[in-house]
Length: 151
Image (cartoon, rainbow, N blue to C red):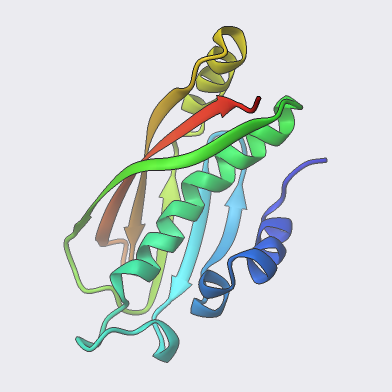
């Protein structure tokens, strides 16, 4: 069964309600690219009249993790996934609609193939860049995902 943006958003409602209620939504996903979006508002604000950093992190992580989850499902194997590390850089106040894009989907197939072939866990760093409606970068997140066969 193919994983679609709509299915991910429905999953979030039931399993990640804090992200859903904050307005985080997956807008587009294929094997190489994913786009998540969130709009600044009362539910996700900080005291400085911008979006709370953790809400940005949820959207940024969704843009990476949705592709990992989808490609694991496509593999037909039981593989676990987990964020091991992450870094973030904030360059401008996040107001309005912030769109996070990750174009690192090509890294996932190799990691999954290696973990299936060797039985050893693999790690990949994936970057998600958030831009405002003017195309200005407001934050950049990097996530180190680990994948390994379930025993």
